[in-house]
Length: 406
Image (tube, rainbow, N blue to C red):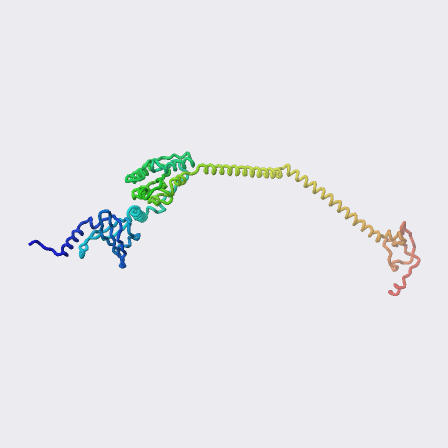
């Protein structure tokens, strides 16, 4: 009799077959979401389908931490996980460990994942950013040879500084070969030795710009010794090399503005410097002239001839002052002499004699002012205003008052 197996045995055997298939244990399946249900337990039950089939899926609550969006009917998703058999029902289903949106959503998830990885590796660190030289002679451009981006860069560079040489590496900026082409362009221009490099292209969808999100391109930008300005898409577009490059420009036109110094501003700056220098020179010359005039005046003042003139003038002034002082002093003395003269007149004996008074002296010429000093018979001389009278004392008499005193 042939071998007969139970249902459980068959389901278990099939489950083992599935578990031993490596591809089924780590598989990604793309399809449209349908019959999506969020269970109160935290599990998500749903079905993905395409035009030719469906497959049941479940994501357990423990795996939901990595889900960045809420699943809805009709979404195109890529489900990563394992295909296993549920023994009780004898059905296989996809046990999801990761769910990402397909198309732009899938690329966005991939972009965010690479961004986190490169951030952790330090490729975005500011200490690795190279400063852009202010004045450049050569500008390297890695972009498509046709299109608005390269024309904008050329036009703005010519307008700002026609002396800057533009070296274009005609790179492929879209498709499977784009990443390798961009990397070759960066290395070629670095080898030539341009002063600054612009890497970019015009706007587009995330799929169109994806070459600038490749890890290899980001590493090439990071390793480049020439300062790189990323200029990918429009102002709202963001790529991985925007974070790795030394400077990010919102558009290729803005990149040219940042890389090339406006020569008109430089000319205006130089003109201002020249005017300022001329003004400073004029001021210094005028200051030196003024100083020379002061020194000349000082020398003239301190010269021997001027000193002699000054001393002569000083001597003349002193002579005049001395003469004036002498005159004043003589006048004062004359006035005092007049006063003393009048005073002496009042005290002069001659003046008294003129008034009728006289004085008497003895034979020895001594003035006789006391009767007691004269004796009868003494010869006396009586002096009057116009002569002398010789007299003989015949008698003398004391005043009564003096008699009483005696």
